[in-house]
Amino acid sequence: MREIRVRFAPSPTGPLHIGGARSALFNWLMARRYGGKFIVRIEDTDLERSSKESEKNILSSLRWLGLDWDEGVDVGGPNGPYRQTERLPLYERYARQLLESGWAYPCYCTEEELTAQRQAQLAAGEMVRYAGRCRSLTPQERVRLEREGRRPALRFKVPEDRVITVRDRVRGEVSFDCAGMGDFIIVKSDGIPTYNFAVVVDDHLMGITHVVRAEEHLSNTPRQVLLYEALGWEVPEFAHISLILGKDRAKMSKRHGATSIDQYRERGYLPEALVNFLALLGWSPGTEEEVLTVEQLKAQFSLERVTKSPAVFDLEKLNWLNGYYIRHSPVERIAELALPYLRRAGYAPGEEKLRLVVAVARNYVEYLAQIPQYVDVFFNDPGYDDPEAREVLAQEQVPRVLGALRDKLAGTGEVADAAAAKELLKKLPKDLGLGGKKVYLPLRVALTGKTKGPELHDLLPVLGKEGTLARLAKAEAAIGITD
Ligand code: GLU
Image (tube, rainbow, N blue to C red; front, side, top):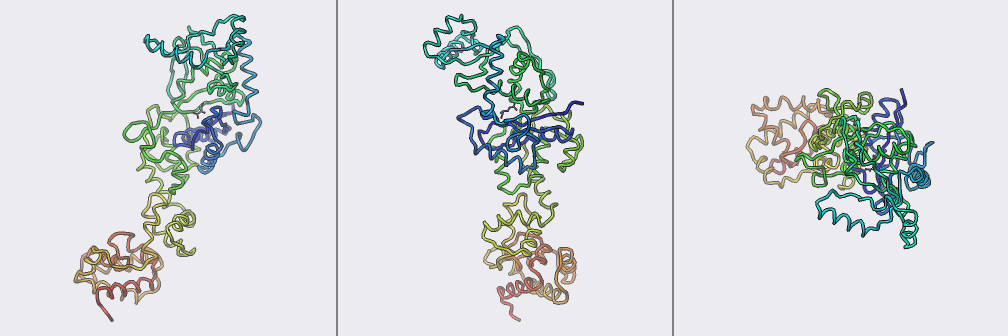
């Protein structure tokens, strides 16, 4: 079988978005599944909107997600350069070929003339397209226009009588009538190629076998097919993956929450959670499984299971997956990742305390930026000034409850872990002849000053035996008990 060569070809006009990341991931998974090559090419021909900063953001986001490329910007390769602005002589060469073979012609129309044409067509209720004014200029007319100082763009001559059928691996057969297309520009008057032209030259020269990209490019595909044919090149396979919609079924936008990968990274999403989530945006393994490691994805991904229907971006699902990965990763890794968030919130735990605190707090969060909300109780002694907390401590059974835990602790060693804490706490209600709530809520308030927060069995091992006894004493003092 022919080696599969796929690519991700972002325009560096902004940070890497969810949709771009998904396209990159699908291509990467395909390459990895079938032992092919994944190429990253920068499509920076929109000189005004492209920036180095965006390029850097895109590449670092890809790397952070764990995607690597076999050829492309930064890593190089035999088909470079991999940045379109560095490939201008190549486009020039093939533009000349199209000109010489009669497939392209110089167009001298100015911006104003084209606008006037568009308005006239709209007014007449006609389809807006280039009407072909420069298609059949005589050499003399060309010379005259050049003398006026006009710099020509290059247009592709679209055969009006053709219907282009694209056999899309996701969408099936899609046909486009060339009649309404109008001749399109392949090189602008400043010598810069347009997207449709550059993408064809590059995909061909880079040996791309499968073009897997967003659905929004489907309508560009017939123009690209015409260019492949005119240049005498084999047309690659196409797969256009569906739009990503918000939960309200409108096209995903900022309104639906964070759209760029770096925003998720900053909030403390784990790359493997995002990869898992992105893979399921339009692809399914064919089972009900939702948690899929990257190794499983690499082994299972195929275009056959990419769905035609739009993918819905479900933030709750991403949060759920992220929480899952946060809880199932080695605690040392999560502790290291959580430390910057804790520092920013003003906490400076040593290594041991950090590990203990994060081991507990991670049970309550969906992303790491939430961790500081759950650690206050481990760093600050309770103040008991919350009215709800005071009310709980005023209940008549509270002195007995606090005393009972103190006695239990006195008769035991260190509370090693949550299991040991559970054991210790389990029998308290029965011993005291009280319901669970009458026991556990006051203990929580005594130890944390709050009515909500981490489970008691999570708290005890972090506070330690001494720390717990000290807080019990503080609570007793607060309600006026003295030994
Ligand atoms: N530069 C195009 C984009 O960012 C790539 C389209 C393609 O993959 O052909 O949308």
